[in-house]
Amino acid sequence: MNDLSSNKSPHRITDLIESIQNGEDITCNTMFEIVPVDFVHGNIKFQAYIFLCKYSGLIGSKKYIFRKCYARGCPNNHCPHVAQAVMIANRYLKRDYKKLLDAGIKLEEKFFSLEEMLVKYDTIEPEKNKTTGAILTIFDYINIAKEGNTVNIGIDLEIISAVEHFANQKNEQTFLMVDFNIRTLGRDSQFQRCLACFQTDNEAKEKSVAIITANDRLKILFNEFDDAKIQYKANFFK
Image (cartoon, rainbow, N blue to C red; front, side, top):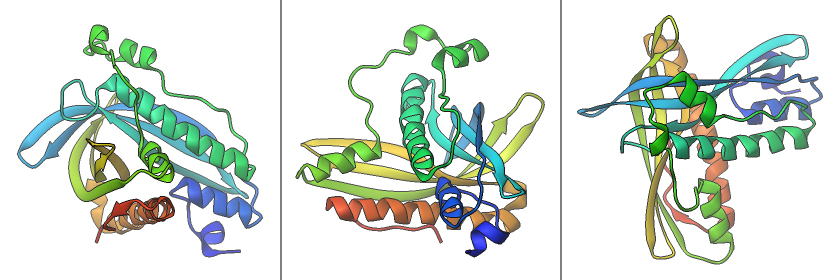
């Protein structure tokens, strides 16, 4: 049995899957949070909503909890609109559910709801929540490459400071983000994903763990790029 399943708390879906493959009994529950966040990106300050899923349960008799960011939505043009972010988050969430269920980890499949978000945050205007065209994820571009099309992806990494606003408190958080700049089928696309985060005032303890988590996720993604023959230059957090 490896060190992860016996000593360390999981930080990723992959960690849960490795634990059950090593013979551990796993329970898994999900809880969603849609959190208003003030981001500081260079000289630009803007508010967005991050779509978080908290995974919790037991590995053997040991409790675990970790969270994963599935999308970021903005009521402005600094990132995808909240309506798009809900759809993007649910597509990534559906993939993770399949991985867990295929590994034998049972859980209830629940998804983010735009309607619930509009009720909770009445500052978002419903009439603006209209999207046209397909909402693509990075895995759609991987499939485009597997179909024989040339796909070039530029990868830029950023560490961004932010303040999360919960019901009765504020939480300073630092996000490890990846920017994908994609060229394929004669068109350019750009979008961003959060790979990990840590509490800003606990940087000395949590930053190194967040970097390991983010880089492990990048390694998995780069392996998929290699299999699909996507043209890219690997980049990791340091």
